[in-house]
Length: 426
Image (cartoon, rainbow, N blue to C red):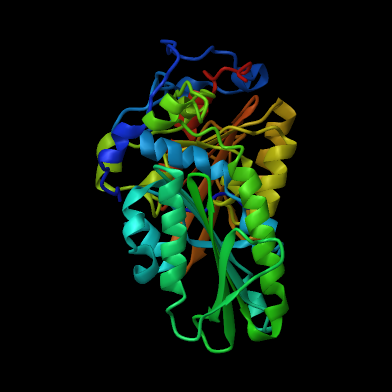
């Protein structure tokens, strides 16, 4: 695992009102101060330069609001999106679009194109998530370059989802030299093949209505690899159908009334780990002034699969976080991992450091009076980036930026916050 990759708010619609927000009571106050005793004894937190950054955990977030519930649901969905490398093990270079989808058709168009995304039924898109990846650049020279987009969009009703899948497939089928195919075992899907985006490539796309969801997978290969298309699409549809069935989506009013989906007691940061991440201000989020290509990806808690979408080594991240029990990981200005044990957290931090070396990042000084921190520098395309990692007990914090002193201050502030984190949290 080489660490997380650095990276505007879409308009909310009347669909917001369709969610039933059922929440347990929140607990006031900060987390238990039960930090790593050895770390606390060795570091004088009062001597750390934390700059402008906060050094206290945030208060619990409570229930999602009408303004942010769709973002929250899309983030929760991310853990139930099949990773590209689970479909084709060589798809390890994550790319755009990899993000949550806000309501309406605009975000869908970015994934499937203006023509396909603009069908009338996509006015009923509720939210969704898409993960995209390709084979490493080195495979381009060997003539084995492949890429895949895997998208799941939720609609208000199953009828809306069926209409959207059929309408998108109909429009896709009108593209030049596109023909329908019928892979074995996919009778419920519309599958079509067409020329890829570049000469010598072929694409295959599937559109599957699955309850209130539409599953869309597009896979592109060099022509010499055409025999990979149908098996990959079949695998994608079968894996994604089973995984999205496990997503505990909040019910719409209609679903709650009909008892077709169990009620959910929704709390943002239900695992109580986001409160320990360095925050962005609400203004920074509203203005998109963040180090991520999509505002909806942050102020979030992700599981191992969703965290792999943000990684330079998706399969390695997925395996490591599962192995160490880091099932709830916070993403905002900083990333905070919480392993099941302190040894697991140490393994995460060691793996981050190893990944930095593997990528050729050069070691940098630790923040003053914080010798346990590990910092690195990378210069690529005339852009200099710095990373620092800190650990306290079961928690690892990762920060990055373009100025070493600023990143060191972030790391120091993150360390102080983690000394106040609950080491017994589940």
